[in-house]
Image (tube, rainbow, N blue to C red; front, side):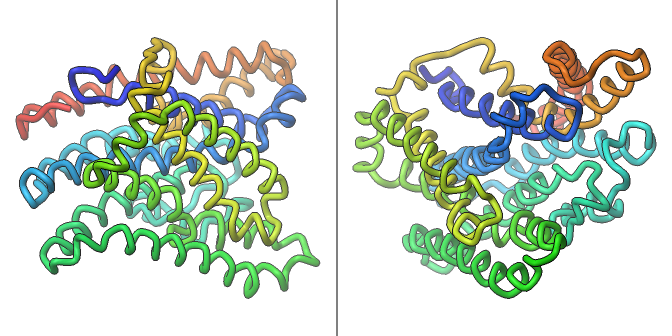
Length: 370
């Protein structure tokens, strides 16, 4: 059921899955048991699930506000984003720059790229791989900055009714950008080892090549608010949407088994985003078991997911270094459990210090509640 605050509890399950996918994927860069390689390779799609979730949740609220008032309260919107996102992020940036011992790789990109949320452009994973996972936060912050102004512009220019077509055009632009980049920049480098670095820099990280998930989330939010047929359809077909989404996700995993292949580089992100969009549609359907089920474990993981995402790499790095000094085997299931427990504890510290304090300041300043 939905909570009194209007929260979709079903989405907590997906958010929990997303952070577990990311944790498993990134754990491969540390000492790990063999099964992590077997099952963690496709954990990169957890970020795509986060994109779809963000696209839907943010746009659904904005479209609901537009339906009621034909405008957006920018002060409220940006205050919520600012006090939710920035303090934990800046704390993590501060820790990385002030305490080099926690860095999981050799070097950091320049500080200005973190401050301006442009780190995802020109990100050299191999030479400046510390806190590299902030690339997705950069894309989300760019999204948060642009979407309210874009919607207000569409309202002002009387083109709001064309939004679904604009979203589809953005997806086509993203697919086209990946195809052109593959042909122009990656193909000539394939005989060398440099193509991996270029692939990440020019296809995997840039915002304009990763619009699929956010765009599909926004389209879902728009249809949920403005299409009675769409809302009725998902309300009655929740479990079917879940089954189709899982089948399509399995196909997407197979399709992207070689992530840097030409077909996966061009179409893979779109297929993954579409699969997760179907699961999001299932999670907001009253007829789906995801919607009707509320679990403490997934709700807690969901609420901790942002702090977990920010801190998990340096926590795992620190814990494994300590265990190595104690001559304890790090490539074991026991070490994995210890590391994940430490990650959760760190996320709870984030929650009860910086996040809670930030929320109190926000509510005091602008008199709103989440």
